[in-house]
Image (tube, rainbow, N blue to C red; front, top):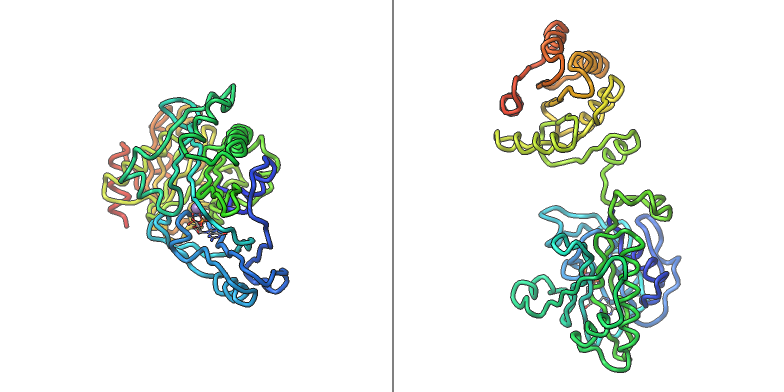
Length: 383
Ligand code: GDP
Ligand code: MN
């Protein structure tokens, strides 16, 4: 789960990581005038889940109060495309308004889970800001990496080493070491897979401020974080949210072949095979090991909510469940929902012969396949 900048900053505050003074948040449909702004400068920031907002017009400095209100109004509802939105756009539904900071230096600090080290890894650079990706490509030697022992946390000597490497001025040297240790603690406490401050600035007044925040929480650990469970998952589509409510593991994709599979591994293999056959899956869907009629019906309903779906491919391995039970489930479910797109079914496993016969006898137009490859090809041809 990705947190919006202002949500991340609320967590930063809990960990004594300094942030700019918040002047307010305005959501779409709200009147900006309800937040009181100072006469002077302030910064207005689009709250979307993508980096690169600055370069895409999602971060704007207002010199006066009136200018600020005007910027807020224009920014709300704006469509933002950055290098991280992969050709799509994100609608700005809320903006964060903060006191503007006077930037003297921009530093990059983040912590990511590093698979090779099997540990959190601090990634930092003295040259932070909006061109960090460019820097990583052209001058990778300027990127500092330091693993953190998950049990001990970031140690003092490490924090000092990092401060030296980033050329942190003496006056705020200690503040920096405390900040980065707090950041490592936050990373662990919140089961994050990423926390990033870009830029962490040194102001003209020689103070440290986390000017931006990016936090990604491991979804599998969300049950441990009651404060986050209540939050809206900004990245999920309506269909995904609905699927989650009824306990179906569904992720929407760009294609038009709806896929119903049992088991996450088989589901991924199915997506690959569809692609190999020249098609594109509309979704990832794992109905689970013990899929019954009710679950299969729900899964069909979820898949068909996506209007892009032009065919449904069912790929189920009868292991825990027997193929004849699954076939009965498919027959009942398709009758119930009045399926009106081609249905391709590949069953394999226990009592597969009986299962296939049930599908044949049902009178429903079902294209059966003996292998996943055949099923994928038939699904692609059916469109
Ligand atoms: P991102 O582009 O999505 O990463 O958005 P950021 O929040 O990092 O903002 C982008 C850039 O806007 C920063 O690197 C800063 O240079 C600038 N910026 C953000 N906040 C302020 C501020 O309070 N004052 C000034 N002068 N610039 C800011
Ligand atoms: Mn940033």
